Image 1 (cartoon, one colour):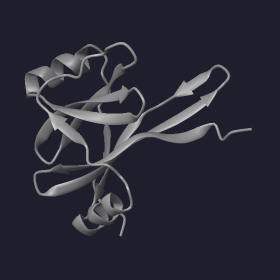
Image 2: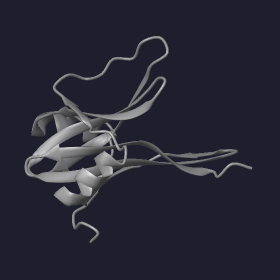
Image 3: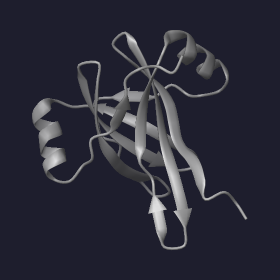
Image 4: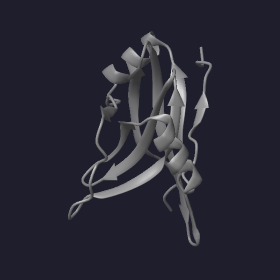
Length: 127
């Protein structure tokens, strides 16, 4: 039987002068589907080594990704990191990737008031 807990979309985000490992934890079993996304602060050296090992860099853009046939787009939440604000999407087609979209405070408040989660940030790097 396959492990019911896996890592979904994941990437390294370079926000200002800080690095973050963005990771979705997926837990699936009959009647259960839990898939939160977290941001974990990383040092520059950790980020560089993770990228060398195959972790992709996060896409940071100014427009919301659009679903198309074969491509599913899900809003995962609002990320406050290093003085910047992003809406974060899980984009699934042949791959599973996180896409960060720059937003302002008013947009963040609107999303949160409509039920969007605030993405938990672990602010101290694991060293």
